[in-house]
Amino acid sequence: MTTGRLQRLLGPNFGKLCAFRKGLIAMTIILHHLENSRSQRIIWLLEELGLDYEIKRYERDPKTQKAPASLKAIHPLGKSPMIEDDGEVIIETAVIAEYLVEKAGGKLGAPADKKGARLYNQYLHFAEGSMMPPLYGLLVVGRLGPLGWPARKPVGQMVTDLLVWLESELAGRDYFAGSQLTAADIMMSFPLEACQVRAGLDERYPNLLAWLERIHARPQYRTALEKGGPYAYA
Ligand SMILES: N[C@@H](CCC(=O)N[C@@H](CS)C(=O)NCC(=O)O)C(=O)O
Image 1: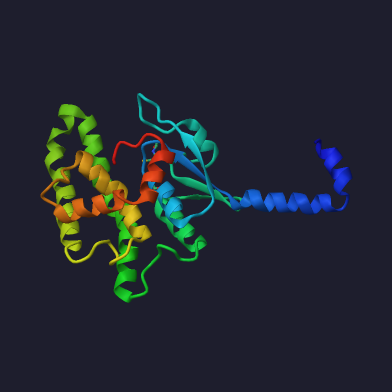
Image 2: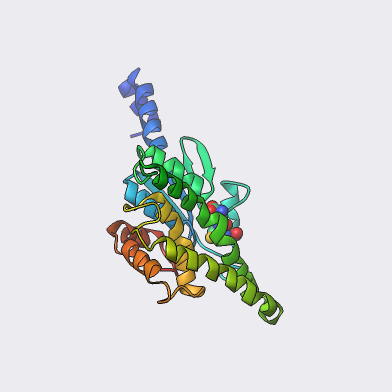
C-alpha cells in the first residue's frame, strides 16, 4: 500500500502511526561493528543485557587492517565500536558499556558494595587505559621487524607485569569486580584474549585462564561470536 493511500485511510491517525513507528525505530540500538575487533565486546554485552539491537558490520582492509572509510561517515574518527541510539552517536567502548548498562536498568553494573563498585570502575577503564597501550605497542614493534627488536623486551615486560598483577587479583574471586559477572569483565575480555593469542597468557596464569574459560562458556558469549563474524581471539 502506498503512503498516500495509508494516509487517506487512517485520516488523523496517520500522524500517530508515524510517531509510533519513529519511536520503534529509535528504540533499536545500532552497533557499528568492525570485524575482528574490540567491538566484539559490545555485541556480547548487548546479548547479556537482552537489549534490542542491530549490527552494521564493517570489514578491515586486508592489506592495512584499517577500518573502511565508511565508518568515518558515522563519526569523524572512524573507529569501532560506535553505537547510534536516540539520534546520538556514542563512541569509546567503556562509555558505550556504561550507557548500555544504565539503559538496561543497571544490569551487569557496579556491585552494591563499596569495594566491588571501586573494582568495577577500575577494570571498566583499566582495559582500554592500561592494557591496550602496551598491547598495541607490541603489535607495532612486531610490524617493524628488525627495527622493532630493541623495544620487544621492554614492551613485552610491560604486558607481563600487568598479567602477573591481574593473576593475583583473581586469586580470591571469580570475576574482576567480585563474585558475579559485570560489564567490567566484558571490558577486560578483549585485552586478555589478545594476550592469550599473542602476548604470553599461558598456563603460568591459571586464574586468568580459568576466568577466560568461564566467560567463554556463557551462551551469550557464544551467540555474540556467531553474530559478530570473524574474531581471531576466542
Ligand atoms: N579506545 C577506543 C579505541 C577504538 C579503536 O581504536 N578501535 C579499533 C578497533 S580494534 C579500530 O576501529 N581500528 C580501525 C582503524 O583504526 O582504522 C575504544 O575503546 O572504543
